[in-house]
Image (cartoon, rainbow, N blue to C red):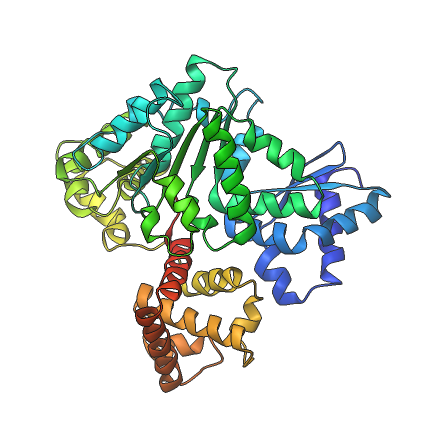
Length: 433
């Protein structure tokens, strides 16, 4: 049993003896071994969501099985497909080195000009221009691109500077792991000695007491040392209702810049820019067609251009407007990246519950509330009929589903904290940036 695949197969076999078939299917389908060296098992999960669950719920169990296999302690690293590309690159490369996420490849328009100018200023004078810089706006508008561009520019000028990039939810996961493994000092050393700290989706630390405490001290340490902090979020601090006031205040110390959906001219430029990056020649009229029909965000347009390229490369098709209309029909209709199952999974994860309990019949208050939230979001995000929603929860009748939806609607309307919780869960479901 020398290969990583053989070892992971043994781990899966061991887990099957301890977990239900539903848990195995839900969380471990699609996982695969990546590497095994120096007593470190590296695996890839099917999604970021599943990766987080495996790390938070099952890491200790997996490490116990690995310890039995090797008669000694082993560490576990769980990646996603997005992480895998970086993991397999030489150590000298990272997303901050990528030529894709630079200021040169960021298309500037009226809706993002201020945020872009602020990002450039920070990259030119880290720790001196605007500290912290917080860029906020809806998913898919380019916040992460600007975050990477700042890191890319700073690193290109001085590769000796320590640049740390982290997502808000991953900061929490790392803190939990550090507490479990008694490695808090190493955790603090990583973040509090950074010259440039880049935090994506910082809103996800809200409502997590220990995470906010740790981030507060990290922020203070870096700020007092004159180190640059750049944050992104889906909303301004004042709208993060579960964020501690002392953090709200600090996030507002520097400069806040919002990004709005791009206007028509910017959308045309984005389509052309992405096609140029891919070496794709778009005939006249196609960038305009994309700009007219894909209005929500930058990612929609970039995804459409990639789909056109795939059609050309795989089927050797001529790029014509009628062909474009056919292959992008689902995108133009507003194709979603989530399903009813996705909604249930992410609600369950938010409340730290097994999926099967949310879809089951338990009347425990926490579980019943998560079930009602799932029903509410399936109605709100997907506009499913009451009967269809009920079918995901043991064929509950439409009156039961309607009662659940109304109860959550009333809670959201009357309780600002509940509204903020629902906003975070919704962001977890829809936010892919």
